[in-house]
Image (cartoon, rainbow, N blue to C red; front, side, top):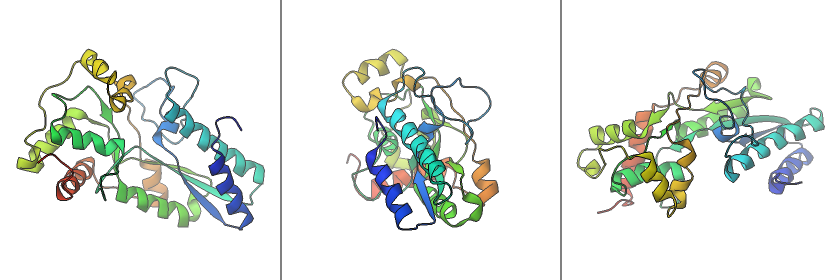
Length: 245
């Protein structure tokens, strides 16, 4: 089996044996936008990450291999089971508690002022509620059979833009949000001691755009804006007391 996650294969076999009509798999943008040359053309569902090119981390490789294995399994089954795949970018939106993702950590660290500035990073974002909505559409729409769908709200958002939105719309809650850009060398230094920062070092200075046109056109999906997703994240962190006092 190699690196193919055995639990995912078991789920697919169980779904087939139970005569489930369609499986909707949550993959990731990491299975789309890595190991390739970045151009002005936005990444789409036609793109696939090449896990053998460049410095590709284990997480990116695992997501790519897992999705590839899912499509291979469906092909071998010869129509016994349908598959649709949702590929989210960084997921923001209301949090339910202190156990949250690295994407949420971006907003939380800015609000807490845990870093003296923001690195030269840009991300695609989507609200978790819109990711859930896209899964439901992929599950119920006949047009979603055998299709991938990028879950991205709009254009990539830089850390500076995130910080600006927080300061503009969160008032006193955003008083610790930094105003300076961190030099790349300093981010790399911090990464030595902070594994979470280490994950983002290879993306310094890169701007990856992705398109949501397929999900909008095929499934009628209408996501919230990047800005609203950022603010929903910040408001929930403040409401649940998950920020510095």
